[in-house]
Image (cartoon, rainbow, N blue to C red; front, side):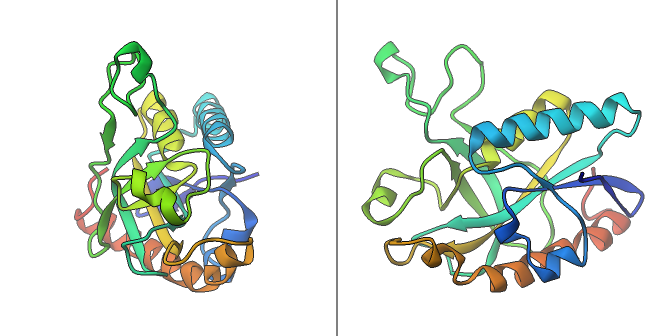
Length: 211
C-alpha cells in the first residue's frame, strides 16, 4: 500500500496509473498509489486514499500525479507540468451545455492547476477514457492527453488538497498500432520524471513552491 513521503516537511502522495510507468529511477524515490487505467479508477483510488489518510490523522499536503501522456505537438520524452486540465469525455451539448462542461457542477470546462514547479515547462492537458492516436488529435485543443489527471484533480479538490501533474510525452508523433508504441520510450520518461520530482524538495524548502 502506498504512503506519503515527507519532502521538506510536507506530506506528499505520489499517484501513478500502472507499473509500466514506474521505472527504476522513480522506484528509487517513492512508492506510489497505483490507481489503474482511466478516470473512473483514478477517481475511486485517489478519493479513497485521501479519505483513509485523513481519517487516520495523517493528512496529505500535496498530491503529485505523474506518468506518461500523448502529444502530437510537444517534444517526445520531455516532462511537462499540466497548467490546466479538461475532461474530453463529458458531452451534454444536447442539453445546451458546452462540450466538456459537467452539467450543474458550477465548474468551468477547463480547470486550472495553480501550483508551478520551477524550471518544468507547462502545457495544457486533456483527460478521457480513450486512447488518442492519429486523426483523433484533431478534435483536441489541449497540448497533451492522458486518462487520469482530471479525475485525480477532482478527488483532490473534494479533499482540499493541491495537485501537481507531471507528464512525460511517450507517444503521439505517429499513429499507435500496438502497446509497444506506448512503452518504447517509457524508460526515458521514467528518468526525466525522476529529475522533475527531484526539484520538489528545493522548491518547497526555498519557498519557490508554496503549498
